[in-house]
Length: 285
Image 1 (cartoon, helix red, strand yellow):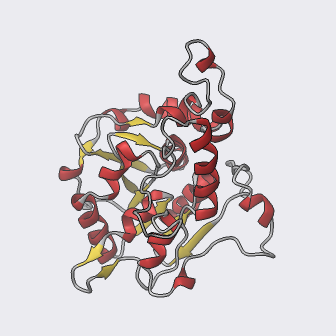
Image 2 (tube, helix red, strand yellow):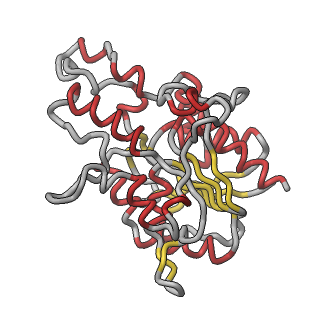
């Protein structure tokens, strides 16, 4: 049995990327240790759990219980079931704090994501977590990152080189195409909070997408071509690129995962079953 450390923010993490990863790993006999900033149980982005809050009528009592846009973007049934089970688990209810987290005794570090700025910025910007990520790469541990978790890795600067730990590695992350599509949709339907789907937005003078996950991660790499996305001609490319189809424990066709030695990455919640299964297989070898 291997041990996987999963640091998450106190709130607003993506329920699929955390809970499905937890379920796949624990179902395969691995042990998970959670770490939150405060050392108390975290809470996922409620919109991604319920789907409520993304429609123009979301602020209207009673009508807010009938989501439409939210049904397409929220965690699906499998992920919501996994989240319900995870929040009742002993390991989730008793996390360590980020400052107490250690890689000693751990076999892998898993960095999940989310997008809601109020919770995710502290996670991505955390000096404590960035040092933890640098340490994990220095030890040659297995590191798995998905969505904004890749951004945390990209911002983790190795003091020995002055470069990101992802410099010279191949990776994927939340693509600008996916991020832009969800942002354009929700900035209209959630007009009172138009940047809900953007953790970081552009400053005046910066081109569109400059602060997207894909752009920032790419700037941390040795070569822009080290950022990988689904290419034309890839089997099931349309399914993988739809932004709607999600993988399951038995169907990896919609998923896209990039492996580079002991580092693996994925784009969004729709990749999570496959992402966690690949990690589990690596831990078993």
